[in-house]
Image (cartoon, rainbow, N blue to C red; front, side):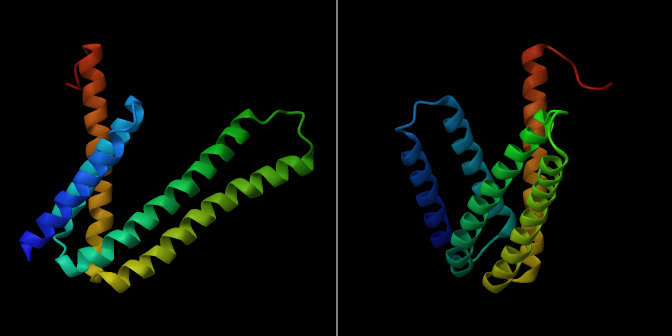
Length: 159
């Protein structure tokens, strides 16, 4: 069973590596590397069986794509909010505030919907582990970025 999971994981990494070879953009390469690290991290943390992994990854990847699209739309609205001029009419301001608040609600509804889908494909404890692992991964990446940034600038951390 572990061997099947290892083979599936290796195949996924090879696919990610292969799909990024045609791209010459450093940002895309970094993004793909981060995604591969996240897959490896989640695979380790969740300890999915091969049957669970087969059902989990398609749902998770779909959720990630939907989450990305929702966050992109919200970022665009955030830019509109920050660039909003005083000359906007009252109705335009109201629409912008409603659109912004609505984008947050959409993200919440998206997570709630995928939570239910995940509960159908993996045990509830593993869904909870997923949320913890995603947060831990995010914090590790922030720490790594911060440490790299400090190293490049020659700064020292807090004493």
